[in-house]
Length: 70
Image 1: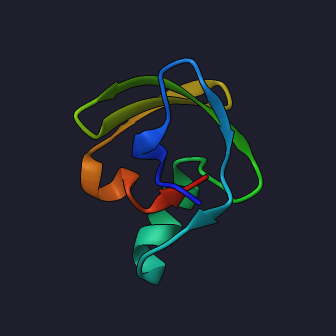
Image 2: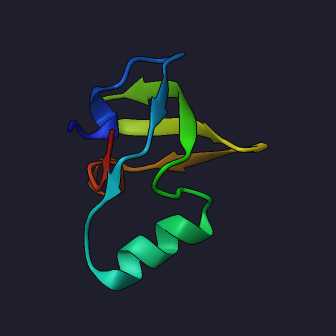
């Protein structure tokens, strides 16, 4: 598994694992990031990631993005 910061723009990846404390995982779940779902990386800029999640886009800083494994 690799962090989503390693994905290239335009790549759809399967979220295999979300790590971190319960509150961090809950926050990412509320944003629509759920283990077993696909997301598409729109932009990856020095670890900061913009991704398409379902019908919306979210931006995560490197610290949070490192918690998402594909």
